[in-house]
Image 1 (cartoon, rainbow, N blue to C red):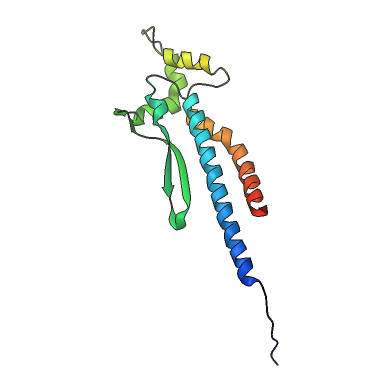
Image 2 (tube, rainbow, N blue to C red; image 1 turned 135 degrees about the vertical axis):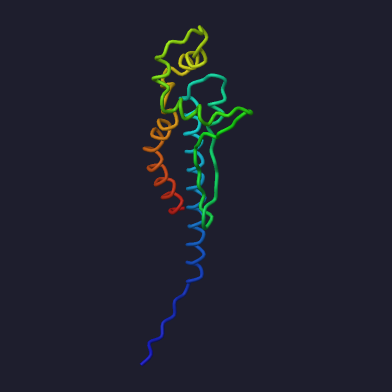
Length: 155
């Protein structure tokens, strides 16, 4: 005995699922880009200032992984404006607080950072500048991603 069944509208359902998938992916990528920009900008504010090279070295590195997956890394590039800032950035990120405790005979030493702290009184300018920026965004990013993806699915 053979039972026959006909299903109507399968092609329409497939097309709608494909469209929803594309909408969700585009929405998630947009949310990730905006979060990466916020982290980069926050890290630049949190970074001590000498000659601006450290701040400019904080950049978003965009790569596309397997199956076209977008990957955004906020990192410190090793060279900016012809200046090698890689090792300097690591030292400042990890040890700035102990460095500023050391006496410095130069009266203008750390003036850029002092001026920046006055410009951004609600921020802590100093070490762990990149880590603190990422931690600040992490709590809201997951909630925001869930929200925008849900809206994309609901259409």
